[in-house]
Each structure stands twice: as C-alpha cells, then as structure tokens.
Length: 465
Image (cartoon, rainbow, N blue to C red):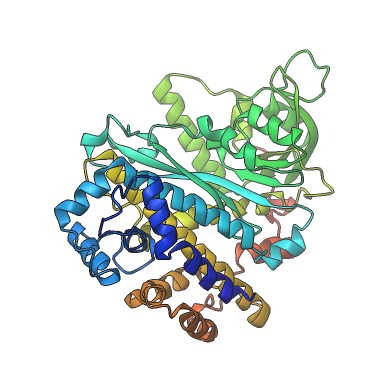
C-alpha cells in the first residue's frame, strides 16, 4: 500500500459512521440508539483541519455538522451542552490516542539528513511545553503562572514529546499552567528506548531523570545549571569551583570537553562540554546576572562570573557519538519543537480557547491536537516525496496553509475524494510546498554538514577576570 493510500485508509477506517458511532457510545457521548447524531459528524466537524476551525462559534460548528449529516440538526445551545459535558472531552481524548497509535504504526523515517548524520541514535526525542491563556473564572481548575513574564490567573499547558528523527508526535498531555516542567521530567521515560537521544531545555533539568535515561541505555543532552555541584574526580571530597577550574586549566580554549565528571553528592557521571561565547552575549549575561544579584542583595562569586562566559552542555553521550565541536549544533535541534508551537498558535490558533467550562476547554484542546496529528500524517507523506524527488525540505508553514485553504482537505474527506486531493497536492510540491531557496542552511543541514556551534578564533579569546 503506498503512502497516499495509507492516509485514505486511515480516514476511511477511523472516520466512518460505524467506528465513530461505536466510540461515541463507548464514551457515552451518544446514549440512545435512536439519536439522530451518529458521532461521525461531530468527530469530523471537530478534528478535520479546516480554515477557521479553532475560531468558529458554536453556530459555525453546528453548521459544519449539518453539512456532514443534514439529519443532525443541532442548535447552538444543544451543541454547547454536548461540548460542556465530560463525555465530549473523553471521546476526543481517546480519538487523539487512536490517531497517534495509527501514525506510529504506519510511520516511515522522513528525515534522511538526520538519519545519515545521527543514524547511530535510534530516535531523537524532544520535549517541551506551551501554555494558553484562559478565562480567569477557570483558575480553580487550570491555575496560571507568571513564569516567562506572560502571567495569567488561568492557563492550560500542553506538554509535547516529539520524535524528530521520524517527524511524528510521540505524545501530548494537558495540565494546569502552573505545573512546573521539572515535575514532568520523568514523563518521557516510558517512551525512551536503548539508543535514543533525548534533548530538552533547562526547564526539564532533573538529574534523576538523566540517570533513568542512562540506565535505559539511552542518551540525554541539555544545557547545564551552573549551581549544580561538580566533582572532577569521583573520589573528590569537596566539589570543584567550575569557573576557577576553567581559569586555571582552560584559559585559552574556545571549546572545552571536560569528559566524565560527577554531579551532586550522589556522584552521577556525566560529560560536560563548554563553548566560550561571543563578547556581546557574555556582556548581556553579565548585565542580567548583576541585575539579579542587586535585586536579591547577593554578591556573585568570581567563579560564577567566569561561568557566564560559557554555554555549558551536559550529556552522557561519548565523543564517539557526539564530537565536542558539534554538540551545541545538535542541541539547537531543540528549536524544532519551538517552531511547532509557533505554527500551532499562529496558523492553527490552538490557543484560541473561549469559554468558562473546564470540560469544554479540554474538548477543544483535544480536538485541535487531533487536527495537529492529522496534519503531521499528511506532512510525513509529503516530506518523504519532497526528499526523494527534489532532495529538499518542505515548508511546514506552506503545507498547513495549503491544507487549510478553502477547507479543501476537510471537504475531500467528507466527499470521499481524498485520494484525488492528495494526488493534486503531490503535483503542487515543487510549486507551492518546498522551503524557499536561501543561502542560510536549515538546522538539519547544519547538523548533517557538522557545522560548529561557535567558530571562535583562538586570537579572539579573552578570559574575563
């Protein structure tokens, strides 16, 4: 079965009347066999990517349901009651899980450049979260936070685990906005397998999580928290002042690989790699550090000031797997997940969440996550063709615009003309879906070519006292 036929088969199998009705009955969205609402029209109306899906009013959703099934003539009030009920949330949450399982079962690696340059890792897993602001009346259920300067009394958080090697969502879950990322650090463990690489930012910096990843035979890569105790040798009785150690031993190095060191009093083995940063970045970090020190009334030690001159990475991957010169570039692959969140919000408007009922908010979020995964399935299909035929990456921004345009994808599914739509889409790849040609390399191309994180020249190195 070719990939377009797989997508058609997926829509036929999941979105048909019989399957959707069974799901709707199972999760008590439909309780009477005589109901004119069959389930499939609600599911299709809520999850099929289309223009305005996220911002449609209840009246707009009701209209879309009638277009799919004229007998399901739900008023806006009746739809409101349905969406506010717990059953709608449970139904769409489980539809999301079904779509994910299908995608994982059918996925073929679609990132050849990463496969060639980082093929010694089985998977590259990224994890990060994004928040959306809610009506403050929901703060009892979804508490907000002031982290990042975008505080609100009520927020909902989506924590995403993404497999960059395969280009697929591994899992997504929703939490209160106040849930700290560190509290979610172990969530990824059940998805990690031997030979995988996990890349996350400082929000998920939990040493016990790193230890669990290593025990599974997998690898992690993260920025480093300078306040963590470091022991250069396992039998050292007291921790090392990292800044002063660097000053005494690596004053003229632009890239420093300390090899195996030991963190905290538990002596957890890790590898530290440091890059001396450009002068303007060092000065900016020093200004911010001085501001924080003044606000707290603390004095920064000399060693801490020296550490500000470096970007510090921690990993358990040996040099044979990741050379010190490329480790920072590989870490930058983490920005792929930030771009995903940007597309979710700017194009799919996943953060447009109106209402004061918690079940309704969760129903809307799960429905939009379903839309996201459907787009990922189509994206994987188009990406493979683009790489194979044109040796180019697709523009995910352009692809989303293409899918949403005039709601053609949605209508193609409803009218059983999806195969024809995908054939047209395939023909439009070179004209409408490829990334624009530019001098600047993509991040995947930089990793593929082994581009250094910083290209600091020895003559430019200065050690700040």
